[in-house]
Image (cartoon, rainbow, N blue to C red):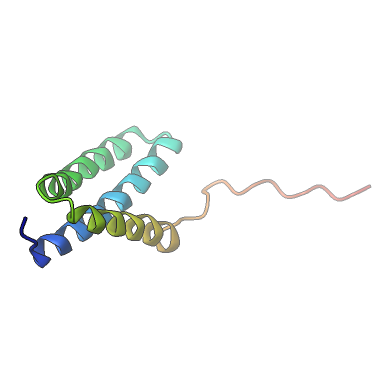
Length: 95
């Protein structure tokens, strides 16, 4: 069972990108944007294939997948979150 740090780094980056794509996919689904959701879904599966293929041969890479997944979700929500396109209606004054 050999460990390659470059593969570990690749798994980390791939899972971070996978989670970012998943967040964007979910946002597209919630916003009912079918073309965007389909595009993000394809990207999501393409990225996840590298990580899955890499860590199915060596369980050590699962740790890199976990860290990458956390980073991807956190960074996407923290830095790429857009405000809603339809802000809530203003509150009515109290009588």
